[in-house]
Image (tube, rainbow, N blue to C red; front, side, top):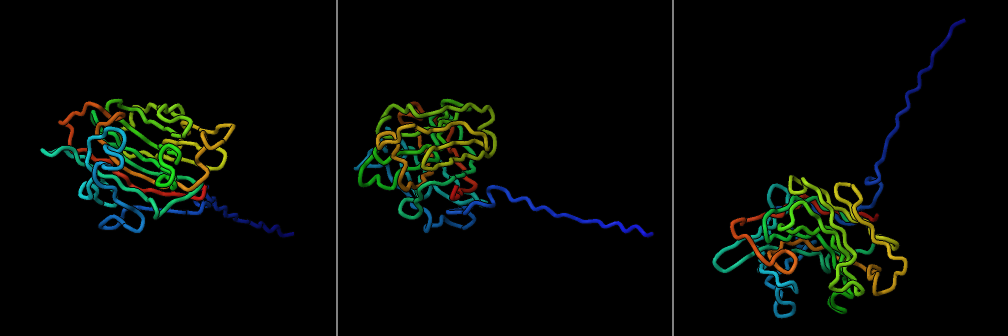
Amino acid sequence: MKHILYIFILTVTFVSCQDSKKVLFEENFDDESLNMSNWNYQLGNGCPEICSWGNNERQFYTKENVSLRNGKLVITATKDSLGYKSGRITTQDKFEFQYGTVEVKAKLPKGYGIWPAIWMLGSNIDAVGWPTSGEIDIMEYVGKSPHEIHTTLHTPDSHGKSVNTKITTIETIEDGFHVYKCHWNSEKIEFFIDDTLVYTFSPENKNEKVWPFNQPFYIILNLAVGGNFGGPDVDDTIFPQEFIIDYVRVYDY
């Protein structure tokens, strides 16, 4: 009797969670100039509506301080005889979304007085103002406090108090690129650094004073100088400083 050996080869394909998500927005900064279908420049010092951007910041925002280099966005803070200059861009009125995952890969600037941020504001801010609009701070870093990343939610209830916040200390955060991520749904907002969960905001009573996060938001990337949070003192010897963003992605969750 002959014995026949059958060999079956089973191929298993693993699909990551990220691959199964729907991409709502993706910006890799591969063009020669900023994609104005996705972004707006915010220019000046906020005057006359919100002078010094409401935080006594020292910088004047210009287009020239925002550039693309080797497939990355570079926001540069500079100092000259006229003062400090930097850059700020937003997706307001071009890409706004309600619920999803925001992921930004970035390299921080360094030095006393520097204040880079990855954050979001409610799309109704022009109608209702701040803090009624709500604010989601995915990443804030102030050079006067090395190695610390601030994650904060601003709501009408916490106006001026920053009670919904977490400071995460990472000794190597200034070295190379890191991924800052936010998961946001109708129940909670979770924040991650390099895929490590660092803070969860999930109030039990989601009334309008503590949960203005039931509406579309837009993304902001900027590099401030000085101000109530970043300053008030600034080390003028550190300039220029660069806030470098590799990519910005938003998934359906």
